[in-house]
Image 1 (cartoon, rainbow, N blue to C red):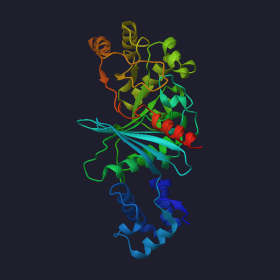
Image 2 (cartoon, rainbow, N blue to C red):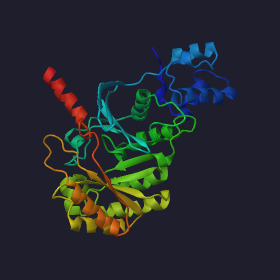
Image 3 (cartoon, helix red, strand yellow):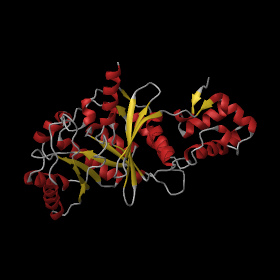
Image 4 (cartoon, rainbow, N blue to C red):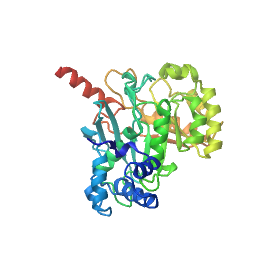
Length: 357
């Protein structure tokens, strides 16, 4: 029986473990911890026997104390547009999704922070699922490791260039684990993703935004989706607690501390948030702090009451924003030929399990 899973350590705790439990002499702890950390996170070595830079007796001792066990992929879907979606079964049998989205100049991995969600955003498929649990930091990081293993992404030129916490769940409702996971992703001896390669997306938990500015400091994306409280509350019930004015105030603070623009995410829903007045209202919000907006093509799923805004209407909407001097990028829906909507693959898995029972 192994005492510890390697992925349940951050770098500093791993050094302590090598000193206290493995009993490596203090002057060699830093060197050995770097050797192991680099071998796992940079080279994808998940067996100690592959770590031939370590003495044989040390490998034997480590083998008796730690494992490199990871959750398993139980379903993979590949889209004709290059998008790959994985459904991952955790050690406790819960399931989460992560999605690989390649583009011409970069490739983004979208990872989850919770199993399910409490926010019940009306257009989001994960909103139909109850919150089961917060992911621990190793379950968050392991999504990246599993994707890298599938893509054989161990070269100097990363295949996964960007990471976004934009999958299942609200990251700021799992703040501590998200923070530790991001620190591991940024660790220069390991995956070495810079803060500008990581984005945390929030539905607008405004009271955690200042803390995120001080303690996380990555790019921030705000799932806005409407320019007024009236419309936003209709599609995002969380707005009843965290009003747009509060969000604007905290976004001002975030940009002063982090000194980067915030990305506004705006899923366009036909007849709901895509009018000229909505575009003008969005411009007024954008004038209040440094930001840009992604206008996102809605990916419908069975049972949802909304329809996507037509492409021409999206372009008209975007032009109003661009003509006002702000950046508006139209993001086409990805993975339309697979279960691409956030949480959709997990729901499909649960339905099949119920049918089997």
